[in-house]
Length: 398
Image 1 (spheres, one colour):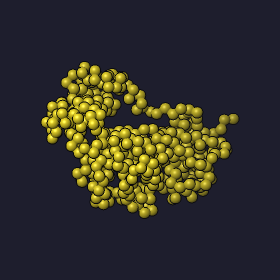
Image 2 (cartoon, rainbow, N blue to C red):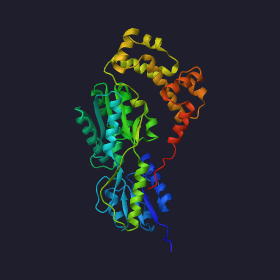
Image 3 (tube, helix red, strand yellow):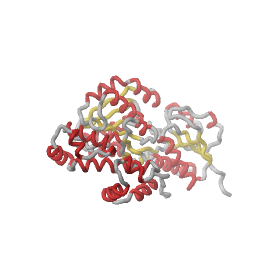
Image 4 (tube, rainbow, N blue to C red):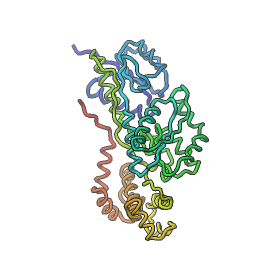
């Protein structure tokens, strides 16, 4: 006779993109393998266990386990998988994002944009911040580079309280940000911290990304676009984390032994937005000109306008561009326009005529020629590919 359908409780916040993606991954495993009855209540990351849990007759739990939920969960005497991984707990398997890989990806992203000075901003006592700082420091030291660090003191407060403390730490944070020498590449521990840092930069008159390139972690699709400028961020594979956690729980519920060591899932990529859309250079005049291009390339300016803005002659400007960036001012203009076209094709359903105008092209045909030459695809092909990649992630069934 077929076993009864298993009931699985999900003690995972839906208030953050990471938690929502964990839930998506778990749901996908259930659809393809488990056929479970999934029980979930909307909550925040530090919430207490829901009252219904003790009497719900659940067969297993996937939870963001913390000190205040550990003992009540153990009292249920059912299999538990932890996807918060703040501390190790005997007998509770853990699945988590690989923060070492997160730090490496962020370091590589900043290095590829020319940054040779690095900094980290996080929350003291937040476990994810501690891990990302440790591994980011290792990346810098491996390349003979020092690391400037700033952390808001969180004592032993809940994570949400620690993160909220960053809102009242703006004066000290601003002083530290002003002490960083341009151009510096800054990793923030998560997108919430990135939002706070970018607000402080704006108030302090620090130019992002010219003087400070900022990359966050979580690629939160609500927080990152709210930032000014929009925040580049490492995108973890939270759906895969959720999927693997469900697979581990399935083994436990079937009575199979499972290794207690933490399973780490690497991140996917860095989603680049305006906070790192720059080629970092020591030449302050060149950086000033590049910012002018970045802000006005889609307004229809040409190289003559760039030369008029610059304090340099046309010949000197061309020479510095080639020496520092290995390209011409014209190529820089075109790169900014193409990047804008990519964004519009990916994030909107605007017609090509509208995209052309918004990117500074007077004719869609000209845009099509340039875009095909630079990307190897027509605008339509790029949009179809981007839409396919941006849909529901397909996790390979094992």
